[in-house]
Amino acid sequence: MATATFAAGCFWGVEQRFARLHGVTSTEVGYTGGTTPHPSYDQVCSHTTGHAEAVRLEHDPAQISYEELLAAFFGMHDPTQLDRQGPDIGDQYRSAVFFHTPEQEAGARAAVGQLTESGVFKRAIVTQVEPAPEWWRAEDYHQKYFEKHSNFSCRI
Image (cartoon, rainbow, N blue to C red; front, side, top):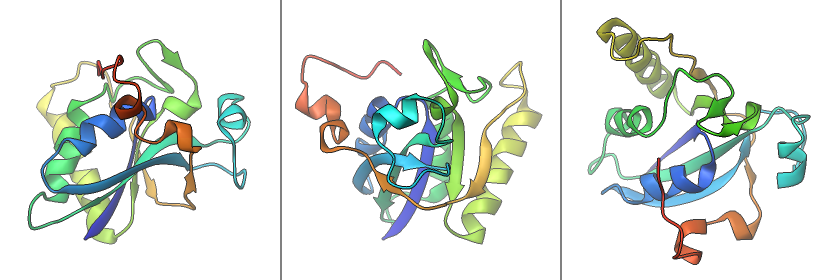
């Protein structure tokens, strides 16, 4: 198994989308990329922690490659929106790839470069590519949110 960490807006929908991919064996939502240890959701929403809402996942590289995860990541959000996704505004909603290995870093940078060169997006890609810092698991009520609340569905 391998670990990957992505931030692409509100973590509920991002988790749901990644969990549906064949080869993703587990997902967890949490906070990363900031300075406050053990942040709460309210603290992250206060824009004082520097943390992003993110999804950490485990995947079987024999079933889904990191490049396929990157393609899914860039396909599920707008990587040209700075500190927001749609109506969700704030630094916790930023687009980021938090890499765990040099290979993941190279893959993420290559994906950003290829998308930039392709001209698919009319605006510049603002996705951050950073080493995976300390991970803080989000509160239980955020985990598998859409599974717990079947009247909601992911619209991203």
